[in-house]
Length: 132
Image (cartoon, rainbow, N blue to C red; front, top):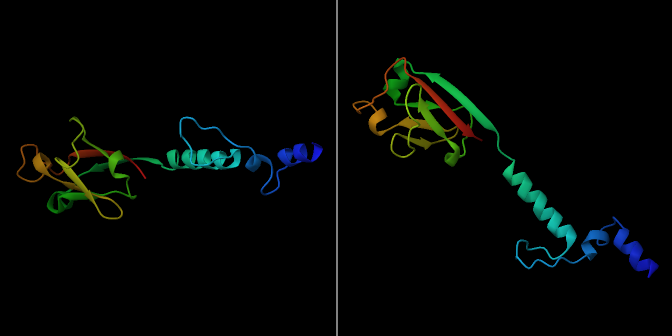
């Protein structure tokens, strides 16, 4: 019995937590032992906290209007991008702007594009918040 107790208390490879089974009635993990479940949890934590927030402000100049885009400093996670013209509402991705490239390019579309009902002009200020 002492040997079994020592094996469970061990931190050596293939002993300790890797010997302790996990009853996972909710089927939340693919691992079947404590060591594997801990590894899955750490992986999930790393994935959830692996991004960084960024906030960029642009005062548009003639070249931005001619080009119809601004480039962000980083590769944005597309679902995280929020574009707002200062004094206006948050714009809708796919309608008012599109994303492409690396680093991420924000291209004006719809009403924000030239000839749109709310076309951007030189001097307008954009605030873009995103994660990367």
